[in-house]
Image (cartoon, rainbow, N blue to C red):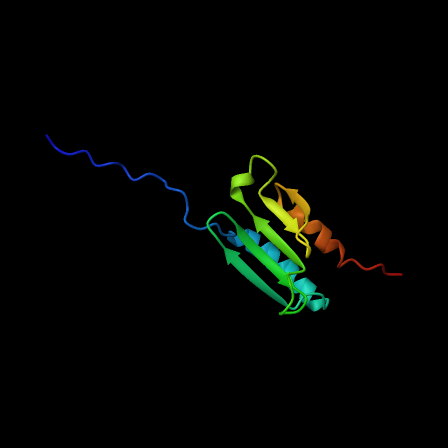
Length: 112
């Protein structure tokens, strides 16, 4: 008889990343914060379990905010998290727009 060859399964991805729409939304916010003079640098970390976008006021500091995507928490707390400079979770949820809202509010100005 012949040998049985296992069918290749859809294994876990080796890296978590942002898709094009997510990264576009994040980079749009980053560009507006840079033009407002609040952010100057960013870093992206793509790991096995988490993808992180960090925004810095200055290059040598800790990030002012981190936007984390953890797909493993999708059905529990929500896969998106906004983390402050001190490491505290400021907001967590299912939608990226809701996570970015507190940062976008800082860009609003009252006009008379």
